[in-house]
Length: 292
Length: 190
Image (cartoon, rainbow over all chains, first blue to last red; front, side):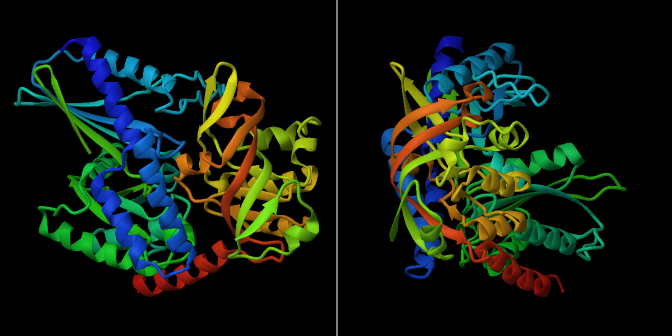
């Protein structure tokens, strides 16, 4: 791939992810709007949300000022050179920041200095996965700081919750996390869960669930059942959009699993705000195809 | 919807109750994590006249600079609870009459709202593009060396929509919702 051309494609991918709400999320938000009581603050919040989505799409303005961490998962033809791709991602990030598709969001935790270009130690940190196909697939998500702060990692068993090392323990952990978050992660959220793995990979599998479409079906029957049960019961909590109270506390629950160590049982929970910004780009030859 | 003009006074603020929807008009000032710590530890004298009887906005905006003129591109609320250690002191020291943010704040801030006459105004999180449309002019910026998100942006707004979720009478919608949802949680965990 020509690095200059790739850079242009990547800027467009960042623009799309930051400014254009995926259709499945928009549909779920509209359902939420219709579900809430007339004249309630909850309905008012949904109205503002729907108007924001239209405005951002029309004017190419970021949906949220917190354009988040850019989480990249890139599938590449086995044997490809990756260093030039990494370099194109960095350059595209700097340019997208200059174009105001991204807020300067990278801060040195020791000095407090913000370089203003979204680069820094560990930023960006793309995940690369080889595959047998000849095409490239770039998956991008903007994960904001507010919802990142209400994410959680439970270590089972948990005496406080009466949660054991089984799916009932997972159920209790997720409900508790959604309760603890209240409206602070920009409810209604999409609750993405990783069962197992270690402290690091547990959160990776949780965040990978954010890329799933809201209306997909989990191929694992046990997890599919748990997703439905959690979706129903999280919405019984009555926290509602923004924590105003209401019927829509979560838009979806998505669960993945990794094998764990005999001694550990982590339930990693990535809370994604309603503004579930993600986009995909497939590159075949010189042509790029975008979707979200 | 009530219109709230800034700067305001204690009597007007005391007339507001949780659930009230208001449209803010006048000058507001953004301040988030670095700015709050700075206000409480350094107690800068130049910030007080900006905040007296006005409103702080918990926001780290995206701002464009077009030929030397600042323009708000995207400016939604950030999570307020991070300022809980500082906000009561800020209300007391600077005479702030309101705080705009999202997610609500804790008992220390609620107590300060009651004691000094201030309210917490909830803006819709994530609606940054739409909120920026209510921002007519960036009047000035202070402490830009904190970085764009953390600086004090002084902004003139027209009909910025908010909901009162913590009032000056000791009531917090966030406390009420938390209590209700805790009961549901306990029944589901049984």
